[in-house]
Length: 326
Image (cartoon, rainbow, N blue to C red):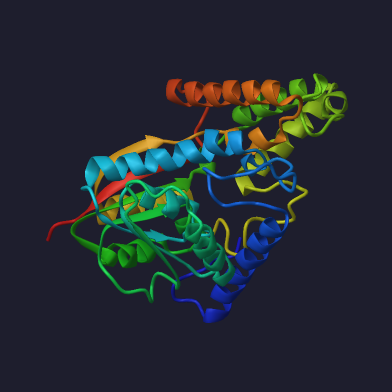
């Protein structure tokens, strides 16, 4: 695990930016469109929800709508929103489409370039607020906002207490922070066993991208080994084919550490468990489109049902907090 701190040298920041530059360039070259409303099928993604527009909306679209619903609930119409770590801009774009005045910042020049290009061709104008993108680390960015929005960026930085203290400096006195972060530490072998079972059964029916998986894990010792492999995949947020995480600084801080820092620095307005496993399942489903989509919808329902009932542990959480009044 590489620990990236806000106090580290610019070299670490450049390596992080370079990794995201390369990643988005590869994706765009393969035909990826970073817009949940205009997404297209993209076989570059062998197991990610980005593979199919239906799956992208089922997971990412629902998550974005959930984040926006919290802005609707705890802020006000036309609020100024800063998204930190916006990447290619799909969250910022949807938030602006909801009528908010959004600024997205990221350290990746290529991601910001793509975000600007995608936004410039946006055909959904009704009720649009405004949208701007800028290449900048949040520590050096200036401005006050009604909302700071973060989708999975804090865990790329160590010392979350220092990071969050700096983030809330961008909030107006009555401003709120809306974020979601991984909580992979809560995931258990029992959860991995359920995922292993689902993948094995899908493989045996011809509905999983690894066609021979079901045959390969038929023996108890083989199945146990695969459970361990799945557990490690979800804990580290990448599998053996991905050769590392999203970037050199991925998983630099942990979910509980981030959550404690959020609760120390903000008045908690709402905390909600996220999903358990679906984000690393949807894109791996194969078969006729109508069948694949039904399977994906069912598995997404099962994920939410199991997390809500406590049958499976969540792999992420949502937090909304208000700036402390002094």
